[in-house]
Length: 333
Image (cartoon, rainbow, N blue to C red; front, top):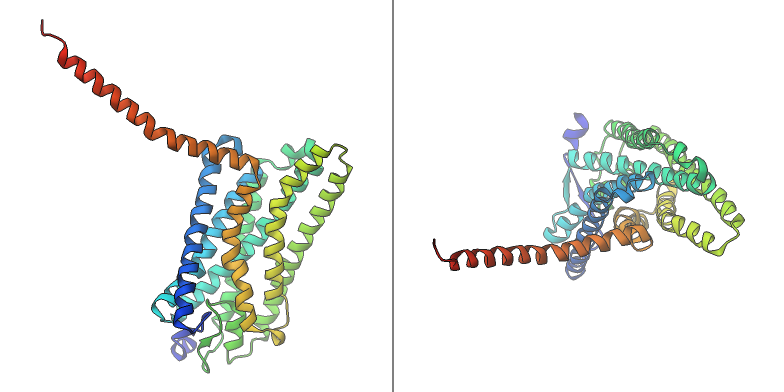
């Protein structure tokens, strides 16, 4: 309570100070936010409505899209509000809430991407045992474990951050409340926070990246053993989308978090964080839709249905009108 009374709000420095640039960024990030929400929602709707896509890979993809919707909604609306109203203040509790939600979703996404890499490994390297390995119960268990683990990890870091004092400056050199700039702002001893953050970074960042790369090493070895060119292309196509997303996400997250705090450059880091906090949620539905034949076929089918529905309704109305006219023309007995 002493900490909260000493600092009741923070100021977010944001991305730009020029009014003209702020208007441009407002339009850009509003467009990105709308497209990201629409793209992920369309992907979730497409998978849920088509029984053909009810398999482990797309179940994991639904959860990834849900994480994308939540993660971009944690950071981008506040950024858009700041750019529009030029009000950069955020309350102490609002800042802590943003830290908690962002770390939770960040770790959950890392674990989900690792689970998706294991799913591709099982599909390509263990095709005959795939159905047995990726059973429904197992898929639900690993997804629930990813969400709960991310929640617990975030609760630990947020709880430790609540013990800190913020009596000096209240200006956060970022466009949202993230843990590294918040620790840099504290006037308390942050050694315990930094140690716990480093341990979490190693466990969830390095280990997840290592497991993902290991899965792809086995996948590549299995692909090179395939004799037919068509088989190799099909195997590569099932992994390329996930590999693109993983390369973007892991590289930026590792660059941002797995470094000593003494070498942090917050001016650079806040622009790098745009990639995994804003660009990746936009990139995921685009990559998984455009590079996946099954998803494209289902989307085309849904679009054809949406076009045929108004025409069908018009034909039905026309039919009823014609019948009603004939009824009036018939002579009475």
